[in-house]
Image (cartoon, rainbow, N blue to C red; front, side):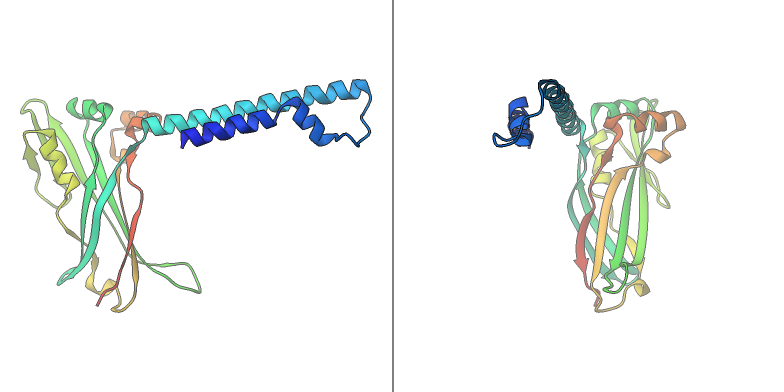
Length: 232
């Protein structure tokens, strides 16, 4: 992608030369302005070219930084199944913690991973109807004294692990959970299911929230993964 962007930049830069712009504005058949006006126009064109180059270079820099610092979560698998209590979500994630997050964790800063789920039904005459929505957060922490990692979910017992990899396995492959009641969906309706997981910086201690907003290493999230589900 960067190679394509660089090629386009070089091509546009070549086309923005003074002579090219001047010939475009004043073809050979046109009556040229006086010398003073010509010089002013050439200076304006040169300034325009410089500004355009700076904007293009800035766009390339932002794109390059985004690729270097992007920390993404990939949703490997997601499905919904009907059970007696309602509709249960099964999902698998793939991700790694970068050095900044791992260092913060070992220094006693807990990390919060929140999964958001939305079930919507399409309506041709209006906006999509939200049939159900649910969120669940897993808190990951480290105890310096016991040298153990702990993972806990609301309403469930805390689990302890001797290694970070074992603790992350619970977040990458969480237990299936009920995201909608049985009566939330109508049999026969096609429902669009959207799932994502993100590092929830809003639950961090206040000083770390400010740092996380200005540090790309803390922007860990997945895109929305969508699939269709038809309750029977």
